[in-house]
Image (cartoon, rainbow, N blue to C red):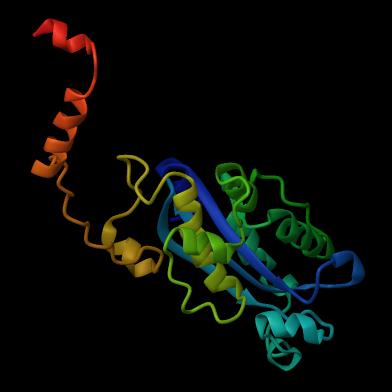
Length: 237
């Protein structure tokens, strides 16, 4: 499905994440990994984009400790400039880009686009960090914390990685927007959802709890009523 077909199918959102060599592109730090997942009408379409890129610089030890990407590993990959056409095509005509702490990712991506002689991102940006803080004020809002809140399995997240983090973030975003099936118009069938890896097996619902009062509770209630003086309902009998 290309961008035009996606727009005709419904609202198209691209969830994304990046890994970098550091915290500030103004200090010479670069993007080293990009991952994007497409959602149509808040449902995963199965389309993903993922690539590593050679930052053409060294990898600081503190950054490598976070994402595990080494200078030697990245030197075997193409640069962001080599991948930029695929990235621009994937996000083209998206109604919104979704990221966690989006300002960080957008700042780095705009820096890389500028180095490629391209215009900065102009589409709507939705920040799941801001969404979570508005929805759960005062509660932890990291990606890990939100996954735990929504019972999303974190077993595969031994280190930060753009692809695994984007898949987790897509599930978190769906929950923040009201759940995995927000409306009757589904963009894809359930088989595609499971194939994409975004939606796991649902937990078997618990049987309904009994709500009828027990004999002991009825007796205690009657005893309490008997002890009331001048009860209004006693005049109605």
